[in-house]
Image (cartoon, rainbow, N blue to C red; front, side, top):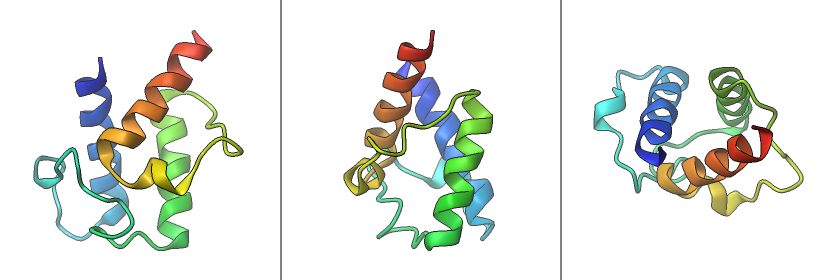
Length: 86
């Protein structure tokens, strides 16, 4: 299930970046902040888009900067929330 979640996270990230980067070009270990330079507004937009994509409410108090250090790590965070919600 994680691979499917990762793919969906990559699509959302590529949409938010809106710089010509495609989901296929984003690797699972891509650092959302360092490698793609998400600024604070883009990060908020990304997180809200993730909530819409997965129809869940992110647990912001539990979200750590380290959760945004890779697509794979963030996907694991989303997967844990999705499993708790179901």
